[in-house]
Length: 374
Image 1 (spheres, rainbow, N blue to C red):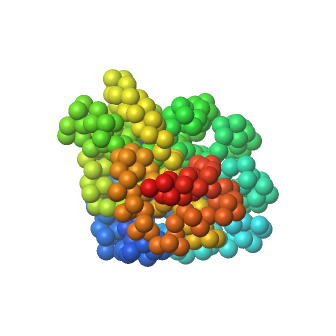
Image 2 (image 1 turned 90 degrees about the horizontal axis):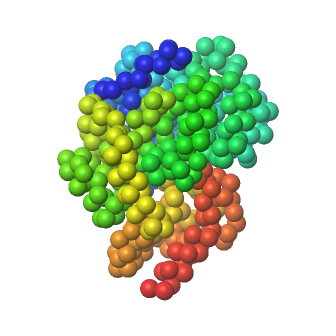
């Protein structure tokens, strides 16, 4: 397994990291993790050299941290790095921060966190972050309960510049992939952190799975160039080739994904300039489909009116790529009536929650109008 040794962090981290946010579940209930499958995946990843595991207070409805504690605690504590996050939107007071942090220690069955982040900072969450969260986390670092302090980010590069100027950080986590490099400011985020010598954890290298399902034309370009490599491996290699990257997180949900990622990083080959040109061409083809940039993070849920936003968007995106009306009707209408987009009232609650800043009500209406036209 390719590893990155980062002197400033006193850590040697596997270039492939395991994100515990899309674990296999029993049925459609995200809080019911399929333990036998998920544990087998973690065990295989560790055997393959993965030593960085990322969870959060809210993943799988709070069950991801519990899973991390129960699964990882059977291994020596110094054999892996555990990362989790404080959700600023849950913190109104110092008591809230204390309660959440203590709960996380208990859930994860640990006495400290190797990496700890202020979760998903954006303009809306800076009030709580400034008032309570940052000072609290610095205190926990002084006490040795946090070894390395960072933040994850989902907003405009201007806010990133403010955050790294006004606060001291050991590392950061940013969304970065070849599709977003220029179009959503990922390059600016990467360069801003690089100028401050802040190492980076890369999240969403596959853009929530979108870069696996590129469509026949775009995927065909990649398969022609590398017949024995998966479409996903191109995106993982792209992210892993960035010199400031500590680790590339993959939110793996099946053993096949674990095996494919291990294959990519056990004999890691940085992306070449010629391969970058192929990726740029594939990205352009994909963008022309007009897909919704949803990453299935599920922060928008639960919708007050029952819409399963990520699943509705996934079905519609698939249609936009393959242009098969019959397939869309079969898949989308497999959602229960209560989960379909017509239940959206444009209340706007999801707008503040979406890290991608997607105009969710607008796309729900687009899906409703499209279904009505069939």
